[in-house]
Length: 361
Image 1 (tube, rainbow, N blue to C red):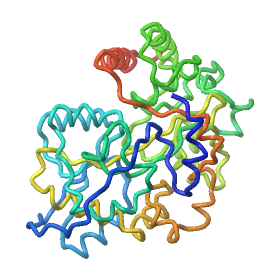
Image 2 (cartoon, one colour; image 1 turned 180 degrees about the horizontal axis):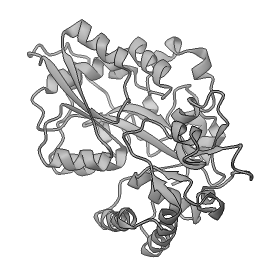
Image 3 (cartoon, rainbow, N blue to C red; image 1 turned 180 degrees about the vertical axis):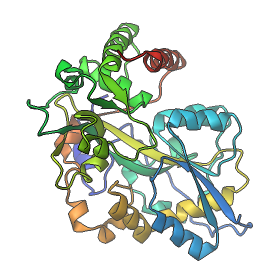
Image 4 (cartoon, one colour; image 1 turned 120 degrees about the vertical axis):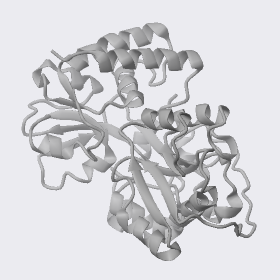
């Protein structure tokens, strides 16, 4: 689904979000914080290195609550573990994976009397279609997806997602094994919508993904960025995110948004229904949404957050950086990953298993 008519309204604020399907903003309670007892430890399940240690240390120092940081290698793995009953108090997930969990009873509704700082969240991030009323989720990070490549080793202009399939890069293409990134990228390279469930589109995408598997290698999700892999020359091209572009510094690496458009991503906090420390998880989210804490996260991680009140505390170099906060024309030409129908989920999972099971030549 393209973003067109909403762009001007969305970019009327500096910290705006390009997830469309925004409806009327919900009212959240401003009642006093609940006084139920807090846990002494909070288990956070997240990508590796996805929250500054300084922020977690500040929370521990203020509340004497230890953060047990557990990382996953894929968000699909996180969903499987939640469904298997493994114990986590707070999990970071993308929009497309959240509805299935709350529809099946695996997520706890959020008590906003314990998350008063939600009022700082930009209206453009609230009440999105995947979770009406933000009953089960609180927005965290968002950004663009693009291509990174060694400009000293790639002797052509990189302009398209299709450049990942260039035979000249054989065995030097680094691919993160993320289902709802690889499949949409492949669909866009074919001129199809990033969320297509058309069986013919997906069959063609599978064929092209298997081609990609032959001349690429999988980047382990225990890595926090593809930049070091490009720097050492193991890969000369791969897909990545705006965060990676901020790590380039003086390296001969370029980050570019393909002409077919970016795929905008976002991550959100959810509380598994099995958590025995729900009140503590809500306290932690409230802490992260303090303006100065959100700004600290942005300043240290280079990932935007949906916190309007944080704007005065964000480094000017960051808030004025078009890679971190992209201009409207980039957003207008972008798509987001959406929830799939049960039939679509089955098709995507079948394609993904075939891709992951293929043996590179």
